Length: 271
Image (cartoon, rainbow, N blue to C red; front, top):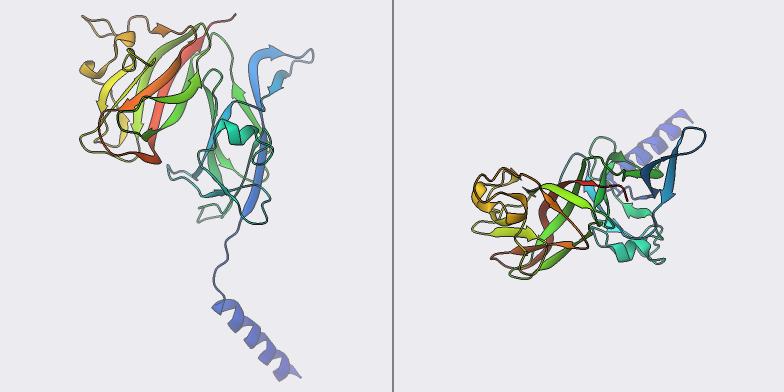
């Protein structure tokens, strides 16, 4: 009898070792809230749910590599474009007004975590969430007035076409500085960022994309909205009224894959 059990165990072990590794797909979701500085009577932060106007990007843990996404709970593994658009965020067919998706995390240690960048396009406020997993169900974006904020939005390579970032800055928002982070270098190409139209280079004027990492904007590439013609010392910044930030690639082929990020530092005056 003992020999029989040993034989059965050996057969099961052989099949286990021979079986191919299976993807560990996980369904993840979190509701998004904004905090504008208001407090409840008990001293807790007063949060407001944000079910529209959100775009989010899912990255491999501690990486700038995008994860492959699928619709949350999809039996057929329906693809979900990453970064996730505001339309898909709000859609009842995709995200239902929250950060939700299916993913097989590229996390070699735990096969559990991803990183999330969430941007409220109604103002440009951004939250970066490290080690997001299926047990994380709340994301709070700091949208307080009179506080310096750091926002970011991905950019793609779209040659000579003025492209909207999708971020609509609120009236009274003052941009202090704008900086590019290049993830995929593109030789002999430049990117301009500005308010659109004749001012589509008013923050950054044809900054090179040849190098990767955070690009320190040169004096020559500093847009007129952020510089003084003589000193280039960012004297005042630019205060928005109703504009949307735009960007334009000076040369190169079109690509739908994000090539990096536009970082912007700003404060929003109380109404």
